[in-house]
Structure formats: C-alpha cells, structure tokens
Image (cartoon, rainbow over all chains, first blue to last red; front, top):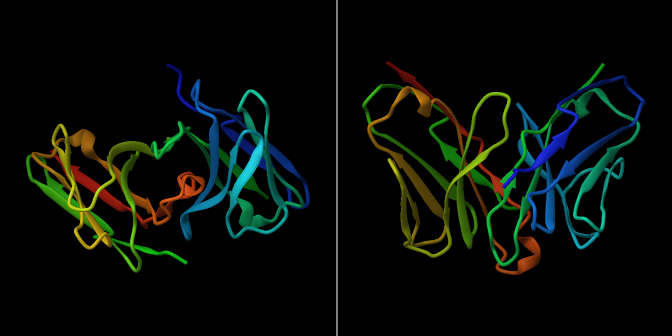
Length: 112
Length: 115
C-alpha cells in the first residue's frame, strides 16, 4: 500500500507570492491533517479535513487555507508569503476511529 | 493550550546501550504516540498507546502510557547505528473523534549512536 504522497518535495518562492501544496492520503484514509515544522516552533497543527469539510483548525493566520476533494486528496494554500513561512509542511492521513496519523515526507518551502 | 515537555533534548550513546526518553503534559492525554523522524523524511509511527498504564513493545522499543495520563516514556534497548534520528512524542487530549487528527507534539529528542 502506498504511503502518504506530497508534491512538490521542494519549493522556493519570494515574499508576497502564494503557494499550493498537494497531498494524496493512503488509500482508504479519509481524514487528512496538515502540520508545519520549523526548528523554532517544532511541529504545529494547521488543520484537519474529513469528507471535504474542515474539522479542526490550528492557530495560524487566515493566509493559510486548505481544502479536500471527493477522492480525499487535499491541498493547502498559503497566500502573501512571508519569510517566516519557510518550513517543512507535512501532510498526514488516518483511518477513522482513533487510528494514528501516518505522515508523508513533506514539502520543504523556502521563502526568499 | 496543551503542551508537551520532552526530555532529554539530545542523547549521545554508544552502540549497544539502552536509551530512555519521556514526555510530560500539563493536562490529561487520551492517546500517546511515539514517532521517529530521519533527515529529509516525515515522522514514522513507532508505537501508539490508548489506555492509561498500557505497556507496548515494538521490537527493541517499549513505550508506556502513564497512569496519571500526563506522561509517557519510550525505551530503546541495545541501540544500533540506525536508531539515529529525532524521536517525538505526541498526543491528544480530546476523546472525541473530531480531534484525532490534531496532535500536540513534544520538542523531540535527538539521538546519536556512536558505533
């Protein structure tokens, strides 16, 4: 069974631009969560989607948004990029009923 | 909000030694998870714990869910070079199904194993 797939693996953007990251969950997993990982703040929860609906949201500004499609694939978007948005963005999926999260290898975003 | 304190921050050990790391929370957690992250990759699930007092093993790894539900530890026995990496504890404190995707993570323990 294929794991969580994230594209692209690396991305370089300049301040003010926007970016869209993509995630394909493990087959059969309907819940997708996004996390931001930085050296200073560690792993921080962004949001969780299930059945195309946002179920939970972390403490990030409105520039961070996401969505989920009917096939459970998910995208997250960051608008008006800031230098501090440079991070590893991780997507994770899970089955239902308290099953643990399984992570992809992330997208490394660098904002210059 | 919920916070996890993970210790130690880093460990330098000789191959063959046992390792122990732990996490404590300021509030009750209903699930504890332990992940390992290698450079350039995402966290990989090692062990999941769902009940207070639960002791679970996965090969040379053993983890326990503390009785108070505010702590957990991970032990690695007879360490080998491929154990090198960053170990994270994680958990969530809401028993409701809507929060299982929202984990609180510890700061990580960087493990170095000298051959």
